Length: 286
Image (cartoon, rainbow, N blue to C red; front, side, top):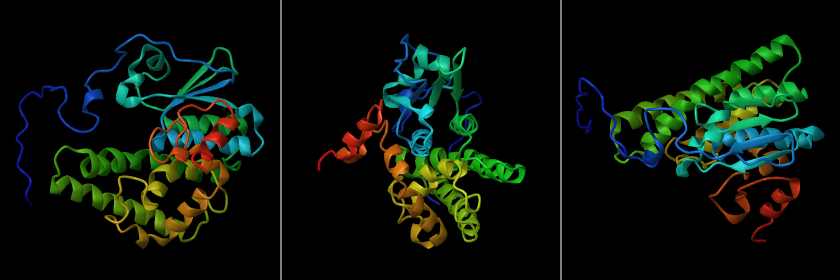
């Protein structure tokens, strides 16, 4: 163990810019840093997000709803540049006081309904449109079991493994080992479950899959933290089968490029206001 021992002070003091890729936007207090209204498009659903795994959950859900014929799910998706601190604008904080993407405003109801936290948004949309959620009590409970499994587990993958493996300004053995062990355990949980289930809730594709795939599917497919080889992703054969099946869905291909400003040209679409925006982006560079 090569880590240097750190002795915490009696009283912790924040030092701005204390390291890491996102140090410039991290702070120990909440609230707006500047006044700025959020833009609004023509559709009832207004999404304010970025193409991170949590953001992808919602754009995939909305595209799946549209693919299923739910035309009232048309939406505008606005880019929130988290590195620039857009999430600390007064308009965004009004929608999500926690200043995290994604956030949704539903203008089809009066007064407009704000919805924040990705799991809450998925549940809200599933219930609003009666889609991608089981109708029986047992099925709904199992769906919520796995939805909340993702909400509780993914911080270990993102803020834990992802931070120390990919973003921390210094590489320390202990946290990388600690979080790698936990992520491999989580993948084994999924792999054992998916050995006997096509999707997370048996044969039915649900919001549980839509929540879990952008994190664990992306990890297995080599799109997250460039870590697939490190965690020996090929060893989780049932997760890999599930991840590839979802990746092939047309709505998933469309949803994963929205509010994205990195990757290949045909993987980037800063804003989405109608279906043709996605078609144009997917054909970029061809």
